[in-house]
Image (cartoon, rainbow, N blue to C red; front, side, top):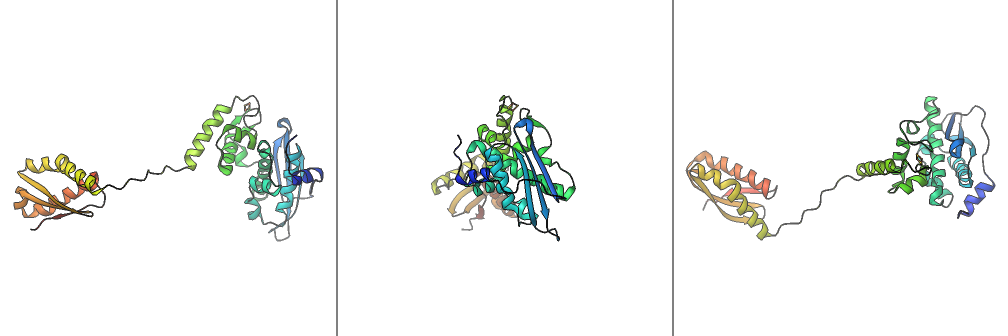
Length: 280
Ligand code: FES
């Protein structure tokens, strides 16, 4: 026996809004009898087509499917379509005081029926994009988009979580490797790679890195042209250098070489380095 809340039991034993609506504004069918759960949701809007005045359902399923459908119809009455479109499966579960993990798919079915019904109102179609496309779980007819949707909306990490939320993987289990792959792909997109924070260099480390960079990247090129430079001082991000030889004699070289040195130090030491020439 599942550990249902009193509210779930109340909505299961006394379901609200069971039945159909004459000339509904939106109809959403999800699930299938072959998969053990099916839900038809209908709603009617007021004369200005702004708010849901009535909502009814017919369902075939377990206690939590009936309770979730009943709760959903109560929740959306009085809402605008925009507000109803923002109802999540977690809202439905919360309204009922929670659902066992293994029964969360009932709240997802309610949310999907609502999405389909709203789409039906806007487009006249009864199939939502999320329910179309490549079928990953053949036992329960669950599509890739549906799996991606429950992972994103409910922040799922494990194959068993996906099974609880949309039944995929709960039959022969043959689709579980595919579900695991989809979880990895979706989570990689959900968690943007963040750069590891860089530890601040000590002054000694910075001086050493400047000296190494000058030795390796700058001095050989200057010496080839008969010049050289000395690393004179470091104050914050300011690196003071002194040019020697050909570099010191060439008027334009001061400007040109300063830029070259600065570019190299910014590349290998720190982006905020400013190079100044020692005038002393
Ligand atoms: S194909 Fe998904 S459980 Fe069988």
